[in-house]
Image (cartoon, rainbow, N blue to C red; front, side, top):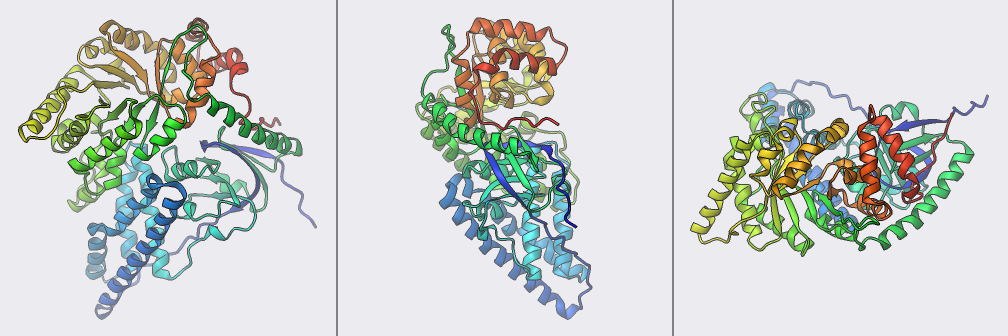
Amino acid sequence: MRRAPRPPRTLQGLGVSPGIAVGSALVLEIPRVSIFRVSVEAERVPHEISRLRRALALCKRQLLEARTKALQEAGEGYARVFDAQVMILDDSSLVRETTESIRRERVNAEWAVREVVERYLKVLSGTQESGVRERGGDVEDVHARIQQALSGGPRQNLSEAKEDMIIVSRVLSPSDLVLLNREHVIGLAIEEGGQTSHTAIIASALRVPAVVGLKGILSAVKTGEALILDGRRGTVHVEPSTELRESCLESARQAGVLEGRLLAERNLPAVTTDGVVISLLANLELPEEAEAATGSGAEGVGLYRSEFLFLHHSPDLPSEEDHRATYRSLAERMSPRPVVIRTLDLGGEKYFHRILEKEEGNPVMGLRAIRFCLRRTDIFRIQLRGFLRAAAEGGLSLMVPFITDREEILQAREILESCRRELLAEGLPAPDRVPMGAMIETPAAALVADLLAREVDFFSIGTNDLIQYSLAVDRGGVVGAARAAGIRVGLCGEMAADPLCAALLVGMGLRELSMKPSAIPEVKHLLRRVTSGELRALAREALALPGSREIEELLHRQLAERLAAGGACPVELA
């Protein structure tokens, strides 16, 4: 008897690569390889170690092949995603600890590898930094690859896909993603991952619509079921109605037309109809993203996250020359537009190899950003020296994250000046002065914004979903303190990437917004169709409302008609 189709349903995740995909699901069942502890006779220990080394060599060849394809498909910036995995394979501590475990415990290579990897993952999972936690995916992918090489099992190959499909999986490794057949893989629906996961980065580069963070999708979807994936809204419709399917196909067509219209405006100024100019900047993680930023109409880089340089070199530290070359490359790619480099915004937990080697837990948990840098001035000084050498040719400003009091700014400036004098004494180039700013992302900093404003050249407000509404309460202190001190103030959180929120921020007095490059055209489109007076009135009304839902409804009611049309599926009502 033929089974009746299941009713339509909708899953909500995080859209990380815009676009609409309409097709059938291909659920990738990740094989759960059972790993058993097997005792090894003393004379067989060298054989197990040899098996391990052959497996590591095979994995490295596979990753280098994937890197080559990534370079051809998406450029150097995204090929570097594989460098982190190659470095994990090359890491001496991984090889040494696994080999020692085989010898000491006389166990099989599979069991020894798993024990070492689980210790690494335990440290990574304990960090508060989402970007660092997501690097655990690299370790898991490498571990799965090693186990497959040891067992002789085949690696999933999506390049052989022959029909249009939307991939559904718990995770999707960078190597699997780059090797997919782009002609037939039209969308990605992933149960885990976040905004900075490798799946998100590469899917965006390859322009494949993608949604991550879809909790429960593996149990909700079967291979062959019809899906509609909206990479902008972050939704996946399962077994949608015919009406919704047709509407989404039309929305996809309109989205293509809309993208052309928005890009046609990209070089126009972001100015309201009554003449107020807003500066729209880009948040970047790799210098190679500069072309995407300028292509989207960015007027500069408001935030370059230097921690990705550290993650790229992990478990080693980037050298002074690594810093100089990276920042100089970014400045030259963006020239004559300005670039703001944010100093390291990670805690010491990222150096998990070194911590584990000392057989300690995480001794620096909670120590992050400027606190970590002031504690580990050896690391901080290398970054500042590299920055100053790059800034000697112009175009760069420095921003210090997670400031909580005036003393932290004074200490950071003192170290910066010490590095400048040191470089000059060595006959190396260094600017007389570089603009230095503070990120206002803690309540403590907002409360003393007037004091901080006397010590810096600019503010940049950091925000996330948890403080969107509290931001409105603090605007008078932060924005007002900046204006009183005669310094500029901007915002570089994800809030700025939402056109409606961006309009509200302008109404609250902000004139500089930094966001992911792909969001700039739509934000610019809306700001060019409103008056600053209208947005100020809207902000006053929003401040009187009791919560975020009411604010969201107000913004849609007042501004939705002037948003760029199309680009998202309709919502299917039950």
